[in-house]
Length: 190
Image (cartoon, rainbow, N blue to C red; front, side, top):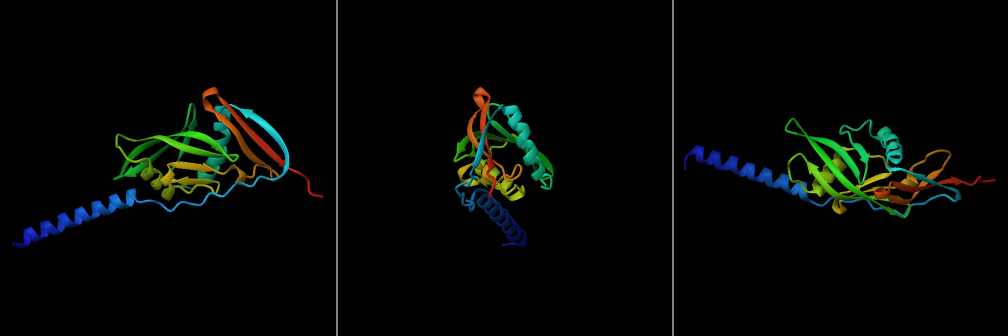
């Protein structure tokens, strides 16, 4: 066997091994954070009804401040679903990403369940995209990305809005443009 055949076989083997490694890395399960039950303070409760656009504006304020320092930017829009937009740089080409979520209220917090994902014209699994986003975006402590479950958990009980007040979700009905939140204002301790 001559040296060119050997070199070709080594190169082909290396390419196949690298492709298999990349495929394994992209599809392997991720160790997920344990979601703890939320703890809301005792206090006076103020119920607030808002629209999707108003809620979007509030969410952008809190999330935008937290994500300014991250290398991958994430934009959000709330319509009939919650849409997250970003870009992924692959071989020096910007590939647009759109993720569609249905919000579900769970224990006063919000779980965003992924319903669709669009990565340019490629067919990439939602789990893989969420894994890449989890590893490359520095989300605040109150947002937990769960790639294996294809969801994002938003722990409202960890957001301090003013003087120890907290927000709790009661209902999210985007089809009827109705979002009910409770603002819990802690009692004075004497």
